[in-house]
Each structure stands twice: as structure tokens, then as C-alpha cells.
Image (tube, rainbow, N blue to C red; front, side, top):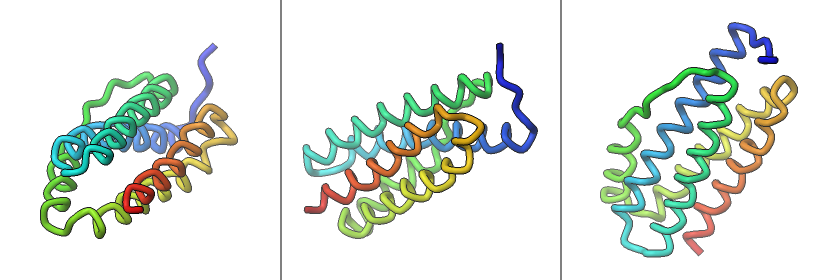
Length: 131
């Protein structure tokens, strides 16, 4: 039986699903742009994770969304303009922020907890690339 979702919850779930899809494309494009092979491999892994996350949200919303290209264009450009030492902390902050936003969904949707935990690990993983 499909879980009953309020209008507000659906809005949050769709926003999360869109964000995950956007992140997939962003990490895939970033992996092609970066100079360090280790960074490229990490970004490909993160893209795969974000794709799994989008699937979790799809299972809840039942709505097929398409990734928006804004971050996929802008973030690799930022990599070129400001470099990895300035960009990676920004990316990590966005991952941590997503984890905080997902916290409020866990009570109604326990499957989001793993996604939330992954987002925290993503932030840590991106910052570890600078070490």
C-alpha cells in the first residue's frame, strides 16, 4: 500500500528529488573537468550515490523529473575560475545542508535516513580531497 503524503511533504520530496538529480549531472560533469584523477573518481562515485538517492525520492513521489543543467554548467566553471581549494568547501557545505534538510523527512519517511547520512559522508569525502 502506498504511503499517504501531504501536499507539504510532497513538495519537500520533489525538491529533494530534483536536487539529487541535479547533483548527479553536476558531479558527472565535474568529474570530466577536474585535473586530479582521484577527484574525478570520487565525483563519479558521488554521482552514482546521488542517482540512488533520486531513486529513493522517486519511489516516494512517483514523479519522473529531469535534471536541470544549471549546477552542471556553473560548478565546473567555478572549478576553472576559483580552483578546487575554494570550490570544494562550497560543495561540501551544500552536501551538509542537504543532510540537515532531510532530517525533517526521516520521521515520516525512514528510508530518507540513509540518504541523509550519505550526504554527510559526501561533504566529508569532498573535503578529504583537499588533504
